[in-house]
Structure formats: C-alpha cells, structure tokens
Length: 217
Ligand code: B16
Ligand code: MG
Image 1 (cartoon, protein in one colour):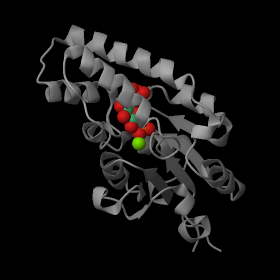
Image 2 (cartoon, helix red, strand yellow; image 1 turned 45 degrees about the vertical axis):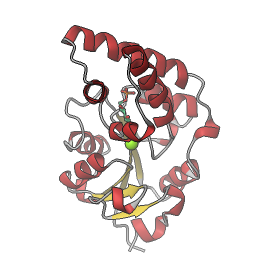
Image 3 (spheres, protein in one colour; image 1 turned 60 degrees about the vertical axis):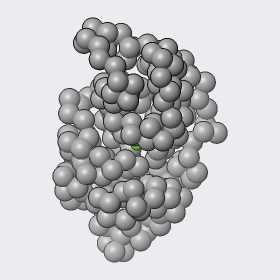
C-alpha cells in the first residue's frame, strides 16, 4: 500500500460539527432587531463566509446601509450571542463518525489539520474535546484572506510540513473547495454534488469516505 496523501485538512462548520444552526439563530435575531426576516435558505449564503462578509450579505438582504463603526458593533453583538449559544455545545453534536475518522488517519501516520474561517474554532474544539486530534489549527484568527483565497489551506499544509499536492481538503462550502483547488490540493466536498461544482469528489459526510481508497494507492 503506497501513501498518496499525507495530510487531511478539515473545515469545521459543516464537516466536523453543524454550527450553522447557531450562526443562523444569532443572525436572524439581529435581522429581527433591524426589522426584517432572514430565512434558512438565505442563511445558506453565509456558509464558509467570514463574519464581516456575512454581515454585509445580511445587511444587503435587509436593504440596510450603515457606517463601519456600526458594522463593528453589529458583528460583535451577533458574535456575543453566537458564543453564548456554542458554550452549550457538546460532543453529541459532532457529525457522524468524525472522531473515528480523525483517529484512523492519525493511526496511519497521516497529519490532521483544521482549516476554518471561524475565529471561534478554539472554543468549539474545546467544547467537543477534540483539540488533541489535530496536529495544527489554522482558523480565522490566523489568516487575513477569506476563502476562496487559498491562504488558510496553504498555511495548514506548511504548519505540518506537507507539500500541498499531498493534502486532501474536506469542505462543505463551494468557496472553500475553490480555495482547496487554488492551493493545488485534492478537494473533497461534503454535501450535495449539484451545490459543490469545484469538488473532485463529493460525499454526504465523512462517514461515507473510505480512508484506504482515498489516501492510499
Ligand atoms: P466566526 P467554517 C465558518 O466556518 C462558517 O461556516 C461561517 O458561517 C462563519 O461566518 C465563519 O466560519 C466565521 O465564523 O464568526 O465564528 O468567526 O465553515 O470555515 O469552519
Ligand atoms: Mg464549512
């Protein structure tokens, strides 16, 4: 058995855990306060998108224009509520087979890295008690360019000393898959094929991925 890929890079929201529902509650409450509705379908637009960009999308849906100072205040208000919600997060909310998937990769000597846009990634990993299952964590606190820029994944590969061509990215957002391809990596979509055109291959969840088939030849 020859090893093809030496590192697995994992997005957080939508791959490891479904935090989108908590982002949704916090954005919806902000929209209500501003006097408009924000639907679950519209929330899909915020998948994998940075906090600042998410706020801009939300405000454009509501047809609202505000100055930069107000944007900072609104983003903080939304994040404070989101953090209150995810402080209650527990291991039962981890997506199916995530932990055994990470453990298997590590048993094969494959590096595991988190590559997320979220600035709250450390808190989420701590709540799920899976920090030790990652060799490195690259999150929204460590990058300056949002996906589809490949910065997050290139930094992730560099941190564990693996060439980008030997990395597999697991991502649920189209922008994240574009970032993976721009980084020169193999891009695995998590979700529905019709919504993830940039993926090399798509699975409904990590539970559907055969590690031997994907990482070895
Ligand atoms: P925060 P991911 C992303 O996480 C979420 O999908 C996206 O909805 C969120 O706006 C972004 O993190 C920033 O999160 O406000 O916690 O910094 O999918 O890249 O793991
Ligand atoms: Mg995601």
